Image (cartoon, rainbow, N blue to C red; front, top):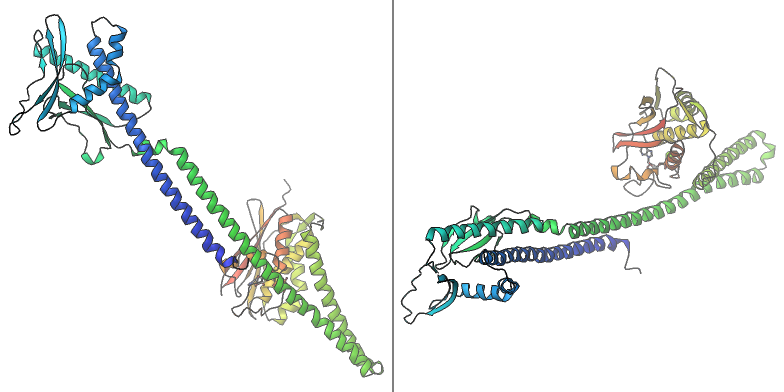
Amino acid sequence: MKWLSSTYVFPLAVITLIISLCLQCAWIRQLYLAQKQDVRNKLESIVSNASKQTVYRSVARGRERSSRFKQFFLSSEWFSLRQAFDDLKLDNLHSQFHYGIDNDSTVVEMRMSFLNDPKKHFNMSSSSKTDNMSPRQVSSDDQRDLKSLDSLVNHQLQQFGLRIRKNYALYDYSSGKLIKTVPFAKSSISFTSERYTYNLKFLHRYQLVVGNIFWIVVFQMRYYLISSLMMLVLTAAAFYLLIRLMKNQQLYAKARMSFTSNMTHELQTPISTIAVALESISKYHLIDEPEKLQNYINISRHELQRLQAMIEKVLKQEQMDIGKIKLQFTLVDIQSVIKQVMLSMDIQVREKDMQLILVPAGEPYFIKGDAMHIANVCYNLIDNALKYSPAQSRIEVSCSVANHELTINFKDNGQGIKEIYQEQVFERFFRVFSQDNIHNVKGSGLGLHYVKQVVDLHGGRVALQSKIGKGSNFMIILPLYEEN
Ligand SMILES: Nc1ncnc2c1ncn2[C@@H]1O[C@H](COP(=O)(O)OP(=O)(O)OP(=O)(O)O)[C@@H](O)[C@H]1O
Ligand SMILES: [Mg+2]
């Protein structure tokens, strides 16, 4: 699928993420609205239930409690009828319950009045006839029932685990006028219930008023929110890893191609040189000219050594990659290893007219390691500093100890490495391309990969600080050998 190249993968992943984010948001919004409605329904049912119960209790108090009596007053039919009748207040139609004592009986009348003259208004008189009850008594009974209803509401709210800021408003039964207001700002009110009577005195109606229910709804949705957040994070992480993997693969393929062409070129040069030398020897009968012959033989030997070194490097890397190399751990004095490496590189340093300095540490530092591989690590890092720094610059090697760890710094003031490449330089075959995509300095891109592998095998780590144009500091951090 050529069209599905990596160029499209990133925008495709971003679009997919955005779409799934939008879908999640839409879904969470729907869920929030549904949950909010659910909380509202719960609150409404709490108040209506409490109203049913309080009416029943106020009626049943002191009377014989027959089950049919209870059944009737707690029935939904009676409740619906009461609500419908209480709410029926139109321009020329008025409905009202009347409560009164007639001889020995309590009378509850349902009265519906039509105004014959629409221009006139209803005369809103108190609905109760309290023949043998003082108004004070009625009012105190009403207060008691109101308290009972409110505490029942509180109790049920607690039972449902709804910790909310609540209060109630009280309305006059006949006129519908607000008697007791709520001390909440209007904007902070999330829910107001229907108005309910709570006894058969028909003096007032109760309305539950609830403050902000946002956090209650969010709390109810917590599992959905967490799972949806997790899904988003996991999807994003999966896409991120996939894209990173693809980019690395691409980079690796590119680096490998460049390695192949580089190596082919590197191998061909000595072969051609040796071929030309041999041909010259036979063509010009150099056997008769021992001096010239010796010169050609020297050139060929040198080229063969170079060829062998290159092949060895690749083979060593191959063995390292498949874990075939076994390290010989001994006690290593790190500074004497560095000194030896520096000595062996003296010619290269002189050729480039550079300064290679080991900052004296004052005391020897020891590690448990393979002296040969540690020396190779130092060689590679100094070789890089020489290759990637201009002539006459200064390379500084220093050792320091902190927290039972030894840090060896290889500091140069060469060309530096861009931040985006600072991790990749340790990957196999990776070489930083110059602007025109051409490598100015020869190399296989294996040196730093080898360095990292050896350091890892010693239980250490590598670190790099570099600024383009300013220089680099490669740090090798190894566990320090301490006698106690
Ligand atoms: N001191 C340094 N300053 C600037 N760039 C560096 C330095 N050391 C390494 N690099 C960059 O990191 C790349 C990888 O280095 P590495 O040593 O792995 O490979 P190389 O030097 O190209 O080849 P070789 O296998 O011969 O060492 C180099 O090609 C170079 O671009
Ligand atoms: Mg190198």
